Image (cartoon, rainbow, N blue to C red; front, side, top):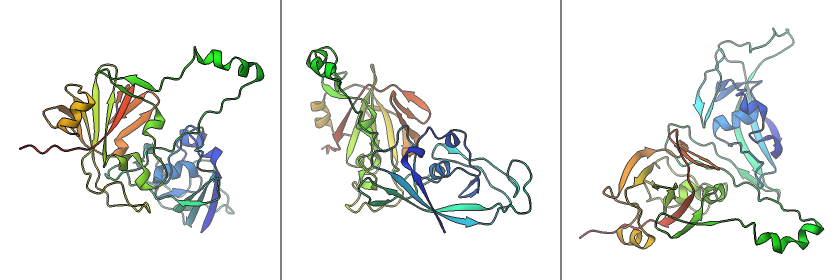
Length: 304
């Protein structure tokens, strides 16, 4: 086995090899396939725009394998690998001393700033329904004040303020949409936003419409304290609310909302059908410009 250590600055979307899809194969890859792209394709790690503050480096264990007759292509975790149909890879002919090979990822661990190692489990492929990580929260912005800026800080804050609360379609205060609000709270499965939806329902609004995102199966809770994984069962429902209700009304009628209150747009999605961005969310390829959101505890009202 071979262990490779990748510093955090190289596991971002700025990696040119990731953007260019420099990987050939599925599960078993050519020796010139980029390792960061392979980690995304296998589900061990999803590159983000900025290095995650909770990770200093990735420690990846590889198993060298003989060259394969054929390397197949597949789409996994938003990345399509390339196909190659012979032992020899693209490029000029190799000399006799060159020994092309393949490799497979056996293990991946993340090192924290404190020096602790966190085991990263591969996420299921896109056709399964298990909850997978959303993303790791980005680092908080650092503000450096010069002497002159410090003197005028109080005056400037009267004119420039960060708005974190917006009024929803019922004129109630909701949280302004941002990536941090829907980010995973940690690397353990029970800290993922997908697991949070087993106990809560997420309401999101554009400027004119309200939507509901809920988990179809909530009996397993949010995972145990050790973060052990559970069988792949979770699916999610994306629905359009016919009438925006106040929070008080929602408590009375129960959430997730019943079939009379919503128009179901997608009934059995997997978590990877959701793509979060700074401007909103893409659901099964359709973009929704989200401006505010609200989490609510699940509450079923028994009808008599």
